[in-house]
Each structure stands twice: as C-alpha cells, then as structure tokens.
Length: 102
Image 1 (tube, rainbow, N blue to C red):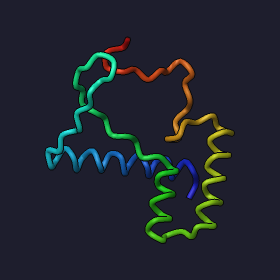
Image 2: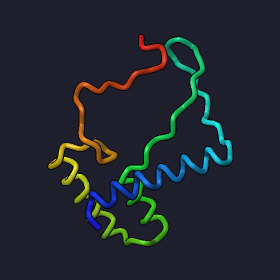
Image 3: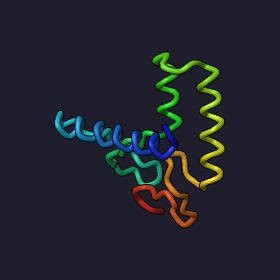
Image 4: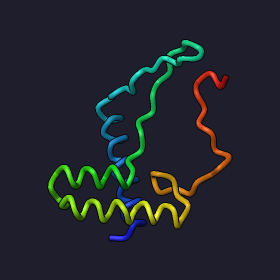
C-alpha cells in the first residue's frame, strides 16, 4: 500500500465517521473561546496517516518495530513532498482562525 493509498484510506475513514455521526444525529462538542467568551461548535480532527499507524499498532495488526519503520517512512515522505500531518500540501498562507478572529 502506498502513502497515497493510505492518505485516501484516512479520508474515507473520515467520511464514514462523519456519515455515522450525521445518521445518529451526534452533535459536535461545544467549546468556549478563551478570547471572546463565545461558545462555538467544535470540528472533529481529521484522521491522519500517523493516527492510522497508531491504531494498527494498538490492535496488534503491526508490530512495534514495523510501526517505528513506517512512522520514520511517513515523516520522510511528508518532508519530501511538503505535506501536513494529514497528507495535504502545506499552504504557508493558511492560518488557523479562532472564532472571534482577534
């Protein structure tokens, strides 16, 4: 399985999780903004290839040694292809914005 396949698998898992939450009408958690004091709805984190590796190790699908090897390979792949933790191209202009944008 290539890293591109793994990135695609993570995206599919994310979509499945979102679909299940929508079908079961599970609402996102509410968060309190530390700057403005307003409540906002949280957005779930994406599933990263590295989190997939941790899950495979936890479920004993891969060994500790193989996990370490894959983890090193993922870090090299990310650096070589200039990707973020989720396998998407880095955008230096993309800033995370809090709810009040202060």
